[in-house]
Image 1: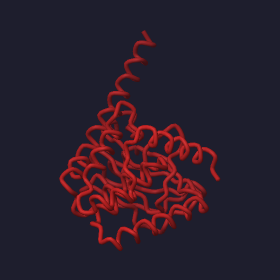
Image 2 (image 1 turned 180 degrees about the horizontal axis):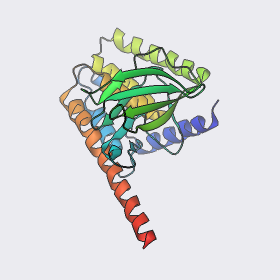
Image 3 (image 1 turned 180 degrees about the vertical axis):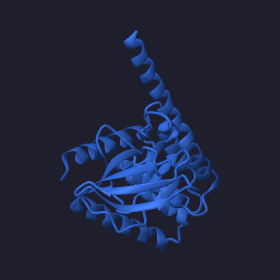
Amino acid sequence: MNKSFLSRVILSSLVFSTLAILPNQAVLARKNPQKPTSFWGNISQILFSKKPPVKPRKGGSRPIDSICIISPDTPSETRIIWSDRPLFAWQGKVKTIKVTDLNNNTVIFSENVENTQQFTYTGEPLQPGQTYKLDIFLGKENPAVFVKFQIMESEQRDSITAELKKLKSRLQAKKSHSEAIAVAKADYFAKLGLWSDVLQQAYSVQKPSPELDRMLKEIPKQLCKDSKAESKDTNSFRLRSKT
């Protein structure tokens, strides 16, 4: 098992059990299967805290400094993702996204995304254990912002997949609302520290509740605002260092 992933799993479990922020998915489904709104409020508090678990990748120089990649994000290590068809989300006007397989440095997917700021990968399933690069282009000639990410190793991924199937089956048997199922999956992923997968569940809801809708609108504003502030602080430090 990937040691760094295991460490994050243990740490995430301790953090969430200590703070008691996230409800148990089974309890949540029993109490309120049709209106899973309080969970998103808790997720918002975590995402928009002073030290959010999601670390967006921002463009480093003009004209790409207005682009902010939210998912996959850039923690201290390459982000590990469970989904083999992950969510790509960003803030800013983007023309094209491309996915490169870093095993052979080959572009395996390209899509025009001019009319959206989030897109779920629709190519061939990405391979467990493999590292990829997401490139974001402003135009044909413009430099791209990029971020690397890795699909979880097969053994870990298969175990999580089996648990998610059981979870979904239990909730479907109770005729839970589709957003309640997304809540339970997001809760499961959050406890494992798989934040790209948490965001994917949030964005996957077709008709989001008012609370989820508000959170989705605030995600790029809040996360990329913090990223811009960090970028300004870094630039200010560099300028002071030169004088």
